[in-house]
Length: 300
Image 1 (cartoon, rainbow, N blue to C red):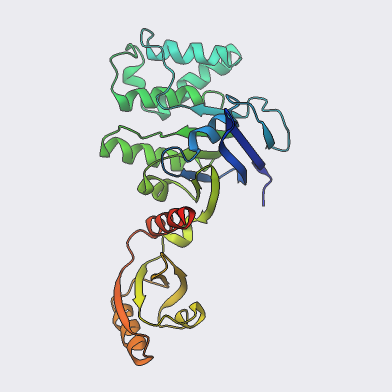
Image 2: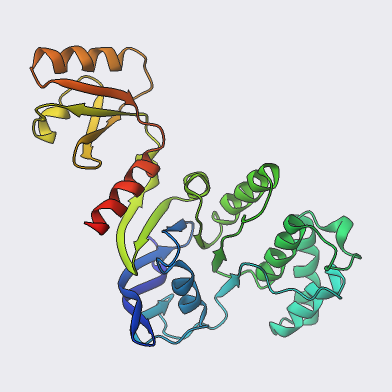
């Protein structure tokens, strides 16, 4: 496995003595898209700003490709992106490239590459001010990508976009994640489900879960029983590959395949074993189920 682009250990930050983040630890590798999920105030934006160097590290450690200093490995797209409304798109990108220290030839290549990749060719001569929200997001992302960063930080990248723009932006994030590491914060569970390989769930400044989303894309059922047995017995049910608690009453069953015959077979087996079947329904988004269960556990 390749070495982490970003490694965080024991990261803690406080505002006027009030903890915003406590003991955060995780690693991020090239080729990974990792989503940050959490309620308002959970610490998502604070974490991105710490990684970007906009906030000082008060305790813990941030390492980039094994080094403590950043050396230009990362780019940060804030929400909203920092743009100059009275500058034309191509001129803004050229100025951004110069500020990044790119050579004239590298700047020209970078601007041409990102104008094409972000589908900004028709907008290159337009002022940024009148552009739509989606167009402005693409200009901001183009600027962030000029130096081809190894780590891309995205804060609410599709906030305010219409459904078509959101779908395009999510596809772009997946594409970008093939070549670099991407860390994005979002309030939208479906965005993280669509874009990311992993989801980090923050609650009250603490990392509550680091979820492999490939497992959460499996078909599922939600089960509620009068006399629930051990999870080991539930995993023996026909077509079930895993069982996990959701909220103290309901159980999430991950299935080996999508098959309409599995639910009736599970229902028959549960009744035969005398566990008292109270509910058996489609699981829907497993990420949503795990997210709300984790938040409930954090409030307990």
